[in-house]
View 1 (cartoon, helix red, strand yellow):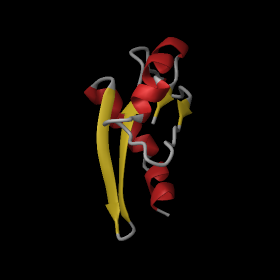
View 2 (cartoon, helix red, strand yellow):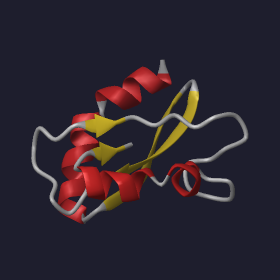
View 3 (cartoon, rainbow, N blue to C red):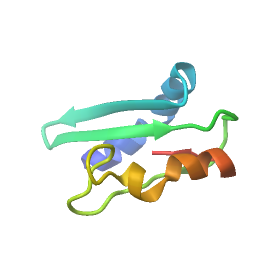
Amino acid sequence: MALLMALGLLPVMVGQAAAAGRDIRGSFANQAGLVEYQVHLPSAYRPGMPVLLAIHGCRMTGYTFNSMEDTSRFSEIADREGFGAV
């Protein structure tokens, strides 16, 4: 349920990221718990650009030791291929 609610906020998060620069980190909390996220938009961001939702595996994190970012390099690929990554 928390994931679905966070996905529902994706258009808002993408708008914030575009205004703030290339990356934005945040969290969404409700009675089920806390979900942290990072949005990466390439410098050539434009509305309607595809977005990849990357869900990390067990014992991984979004952006600390053993991070999804370091393992996948999705931000680098998003810059090259022209898509947003969450």
